Image (tube, rainbow over all chains, first blue to last red; front, side, top):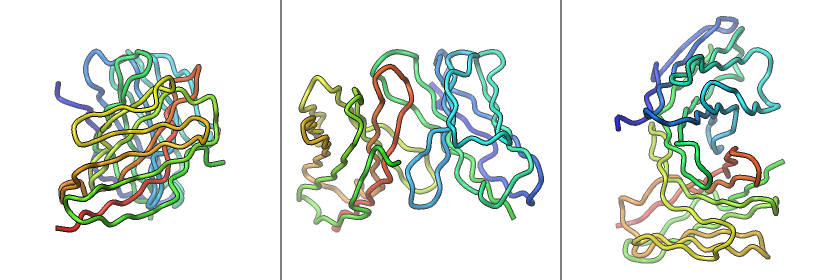
Amino acid sequence: DTGVSQDPRHKITKRGQNVTFRCDPISEHNRLYWYRQTLGQGPEFLTYFQNEAQLEKSRLLSDRFSAERPKGSFSTLEIQRTEQGDSAMYLCASSLGQDFEKLFFGSGTQLSVL
Amino acid sequence: DQQVKQNSPSLSVQEGRISILNCDYTNSMFDYFLWYKKYPAEGPTFLISISSIKDKNEDGRFTVFLNKSAKHLSLHIVPSQPGDSAVYFCAATPSGTYKYIFGTGTRLKVLA
């Protein structure tokens, strides 16, 4: 059990650029989640996958955000035409895929949009 | 629309005493509740959970209480230790979904 891995840990970009983050969940975990956290707030749900299927997506997620989990293993989160308001910690979490279970979080990717 | 609320942004407690962190929710369809702890520059780590059919769950120094009629959840830490200093988040999942909704967090500081 190597834990949930996220890459990169930090990303600084200029407004208008595209960025992509990667998440490797714990092996054999079927569910994968993306959350966003800003200073002083709790993790805010963005989307989650059951295997390769994206089952739910937050209404807060604009069309500039897209997430994929092509083979049901790792996932990528892309933000197009970044804005300063996108600056946040992006957290990935995974779980086995059962009822009433805990999420295991990665250390996150800190995005700063200048 | 904040469905899970933690109204105390911070709490300070002396080492050895009890820490009580509170959480209120508005959605009566929540059926599973969790507490997470977060240190700076790390992701949240799971502490303890409770399903809506129970009113108490205990794990070592940590006890979670659920009052469904009041839509209130609390985490008790006894005795508090300096290593418990962190931000604590409560979270809940609505019935029929696997989405976890988090509160805004309470920063606990345990004073030696």
